[in-house]
Image 1 (spheres, rainbow, N blue to C red):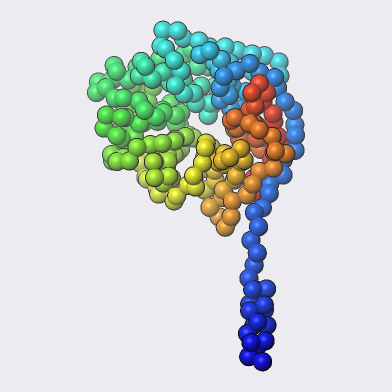
Image 2 (cartoon, rainbow, N blue to C red; image 1 turned 60 degrees about the vertical axis):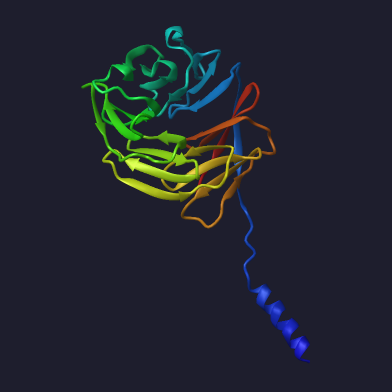
Length: 265
């Protein structure tokens, strides 16, 4: 009799435990674009697509295409498309940034070797008020450089662990170190520890609480205000890169950019 009561108790106990299942975020196909490229960069907030092919940057929309190339500065290391009116290109070999207008015309070059106190650019991004974020590999500190006044300001203490990934917007610079710890710093120099990121193949940070990771050919959305990650439904398509902006998720296959409408909670 005691055994029967124990079994009944266990059944009732486990029936009261919630069975957490992974939520799925649905997507709606918008369109696709055939491209010849070796690197898809992303889509800006005006829905222009950016990609590079053989060290040439290309910007394309439904009616026009623009190109930029600078053979004298070597290989492109990174591109920031936060502001479509002021694209920033990083050339690591020459420790330089190039600013481009909305038609990819060069407007300014920034050579960090020529600063009054030279720095080694290892991370960058466009900030607010005519400034760019610069992580200095020499001092391991984050700086704000004003390209109108040619002045630079250190805003962080040394970052002791190597930066693995980074991104930025006008007001914050984000980075993930080799222990997968996620940080942000504001333009005023306030640093926040935002927790541990799960292992991933690639990542896009949306803000301090939200990010998307690619892992094992799947996209997972994380929101620190929710208990579980959410899988993004892509109908099992294989892809090499992705980018999210203004409710549009773009994935890049071997020769195609596929755009989906998506609502992230």
